[in-house]
Image (cartoon, rainbow, N blue to C red; front, side, top):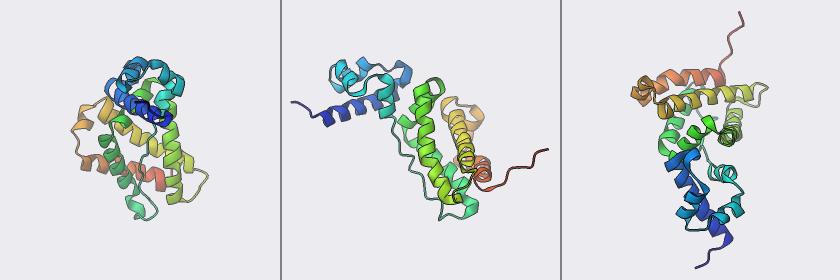
Length: 187
């Protein structure tokens, strides 16, 4: 049975997401993805060009960020940390992107784009558009990504051993300060 072009692309992307999740970016190959999709490797190349472009297409993520505007201003940092713990723990493909972003330029670019395209508008909605809104969103992302790297990729024992409530209690205020606080005066 022949597949349409869209069906073929969808089949390749589903196989790629699964293969990247199982093998990681470095070990996944076009051949293994094609085998998983039950197609010739040349078809993967035809639709996506190369492994980097396939990964970028497979790494489309909706961070499903909550609306911050309706929250109590003092709860935003904690709410974002809770949200991201849910996302990291619920989406293995997002974890693969994080692992890959450490060593692969395309994956790092994709991670930056996801956070810039999705986190900045949410923080702008909360803060109002500000000159330092990009810096604030980037600093919040640095904490969130650093926490995910320490807990889920590098698996630092003390961080892994912490409960969600402890993580929120420690990291939430830092994210809160980045979003709503003022920087300390220079010494």
